[in-house]
Length: 197
Image (cartoon, rainbow, N blue to C red; front, side, top):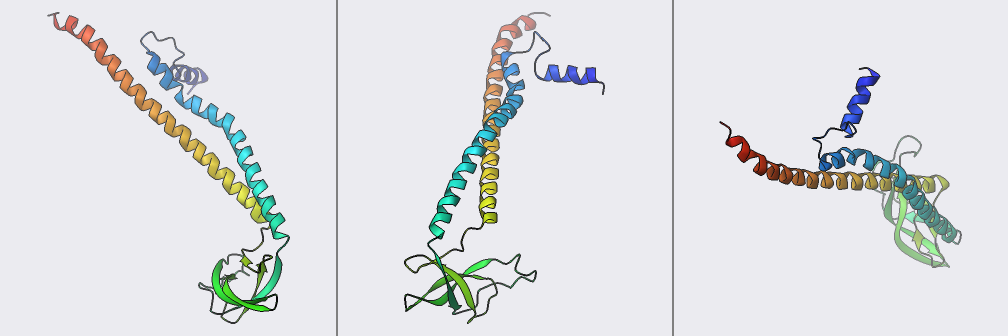
């Protein structure tokens, strides 16, 4: 396809070919996709920045609270469900499992996060807050970055879906308007054609 043909198709597709038969609804519909892309390109970075800052602030607050936590050893009262992963724990996950630990000289029992497949009676490291309650493992720098990435990606996907949904709704409304206009025009022109014989 030559550049001239491509340019002709683009101008025709966007309604820039000065076609006198093109209706206003046709022009609006032709510009829906470029408008959605432009709005996404304008709002996307702004929304991503705001969400990224909010998640970063949440991560920072969580890390500040975690500074008061203290490590302790808990002994599992039963095996953590699931298999132990074979690649040095890189793919292991944590299961909340009944265990026993000591805080301020008192023995406590409750659920603690333990790697899947850990046997009953195995000591696991847990983190306790000032009241001696077990907390999820502290937030690492890698996990904090991952939280930001996931939140920003999810938000951008939602923004894209919202814009596409609005464009589809607008297209549906434009099609209804176009049909009403065609019917009105046909009621004007149709009788004139039917009298020619």
